[in-house]
Image (cartoon, rainbow, N blue to C red; front, side, top):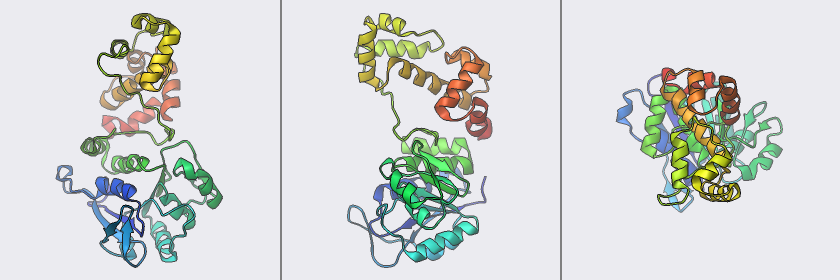
Length: 321
């Protein structure tokens, strides 16, 4: 756990990205008495002088100026005006000083470009919104720009992909600072998934269950109830009273995934839940989730999450909370 009441300072600027700012403030700025007396303090700082407005025409009245960065444990840059918009020299200098004294700097979406202009991505991995990856690579030539991730944690420099990935990164910080239980609690308040790995692709395929009465509802429910069994495409097609070709078309239309892709997604989701919430052995989880052997499970789990099951448990299991 960090020192009591770590200070998070969220930068503001003219034409502030409203959504990215809201993501950071929702996680760090709202009062959360259920978290106890050691929760974050949060202030907003003007990254430049003059009247500031946010996208949507909102007037921004920050708590202070760049002097607040001298006190911050974490500084969040919620987006930026554009990939080719220069940041004020005073802001860049303040960010460099903060980094040198060990503050944690977080660039959400376009905020990565401000970190790049400050030279703080040099020699590090970084990411941003998929539309601007090429621009970031051109500007941060000494950085390794990663295209297929939601966020990257490089110690005291962290960056996220497009807007909503900022929520994933903010929850990642809560998880690091206060543990899995706290991150889950914040996620429940926000009504979002408690954890998406930073190594997930920016284009995240989601399997939305079809409504009751849909011709696949019975099949998908049956598969989810018995994931440990052998569900070949032929068996799924027979259960749904469809040909394999029709099954492929219907499952793709209902979930956005092929039958095999959907099955794999459900098995990984079950395995993650069992790792996070139980002390069952990897061998038992492999069997319950339908992977058969532990070796097969480890291979597929690492491919889906970027972590070995034991490493995932150390980071996100209840004993790591």
